[in-house]
Image (cartoon, rainbow, N blue to C red):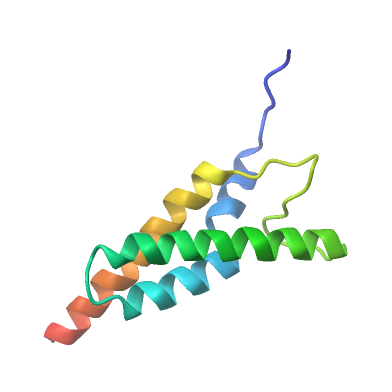
Length: 98
């Protein structure tokens, strides 16, 4: 059995999926408690995977495609969703204090 090799740029593309960023930042900004950041990350992850899968199925080019042959990079997407949502949450707290 051969271990699949995923190029570095595929990992980066999974972390910078536009749908993931938009949903995570928007919901992270709206969160009023830090615990809701994880809920925002879960929702952003689910919507980005669904959108990427639908766009790839239609046949349109996408930044982070999901296909049977390609990697899904779920670990990268999970970490990126938490980082984007937490960053937006912290940015809002900083803006509100100023």
